[in-house]
Length: 216
Image 1 (spheres, rainbow, N blue to C red):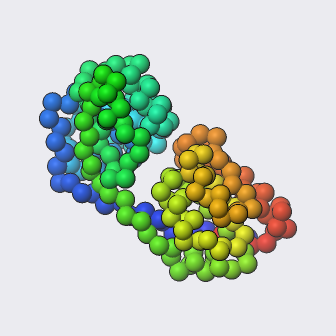
Image 2: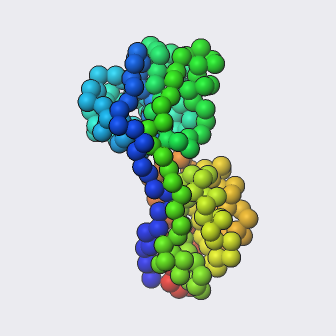
C-alpha cells in the first residue's frame, strides 16, 4: 500500500512589493515561483520572457506573457539566449538562493542582463508524519528537486531506514549519495513530468523488491 506524505522542505516567500523593470526589453524566469511573484507585482505583460523548462514557460504563458522556453537548465538558458541574441537589456527575476549566475554570465558574454531577487526560499524541517515514516521500517520514496533541498533532506535524515530516491539532476543526486539509499534514480529530463515518471518507476521497483510492503 502506498501512503502519500506531504512534507515540503522549502517555504517560498515574496520579498518585494514592486519589480524595477527599468529599461529592460525582456524578462528571464528560471522558476515558476519567479513567475508567480512577478505576476503579483507587475501589471503589464508587454515584455517577452525567456524561461527554463516547460513548467516555468507554461506558468508565464498562463499569466499572459509571451513566453519562450530556452533550455531545461540555467546553462542551457544561457547558451540559448546567446544564440537567440534577443534585444536587451534583459532582467532576470529570481530567488534569493538562485544558481547559475545567469545575469553575470550573460553580461560578461555580451548580452547585458541585470537581476532582481523577488522571493526567498526558507528551509523547512520534516513534518512529524515524515519523521515517523523515516524512522520506521517501511520503505520511503522521496522526490528531490534541487541541490538545496537534497542537502536538507540528507542533513535531516542521516539514519533513515529504507530509502528510494528520485533526483531531478546529477547535481541533486550528489548530496544524497551519503545516505546509502537502496536506489537513487535521476530523471531523464529536469522537469516535473520526468520526475513523476521517475517516482512511478521507483514505486513499482520498491513494491516488487519489498514484496508489496507499505511505502511512503
